[in-house]
Image 1 (cartoon, rainbow, N blue to C red):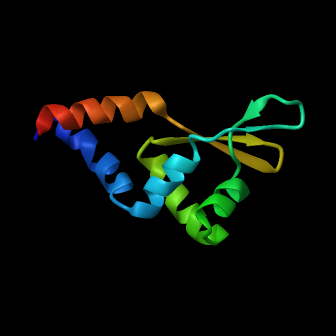
Image 2: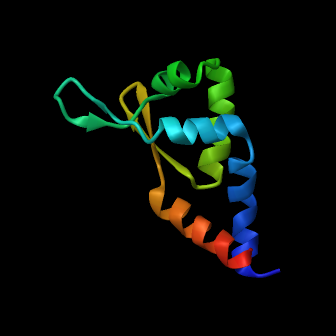
Amino acid sequence: MSQVSADLGPFLHAISDPTRRRILQALREEKAGATGKRVSPCASDIEQHVKLSQPTISHHMRILQEAGLVEMKKQGHWRRYRRNEKLISEMTRNLKKQL
């Protein structure tokens, strides 16, 4: 098995679930923070957007992080999430090459 197809496994597993795809879409939306600056959504923002419980969101976020599709940054008590656009683009190109 080539290195490219080995790398696609976690990516394909992560995006195979419709809830995780909804979360990835929700992460496209940034909001204005208190300073007016754009900030990445926190877990509760994702919860509200996807309309699922916190434990369910945590489960899906862990899978997305392990696949490298989502990056998390702690800010005090908050965890801010953002999409790893570079990896998403790379995996999409790798998938196209294999089909």
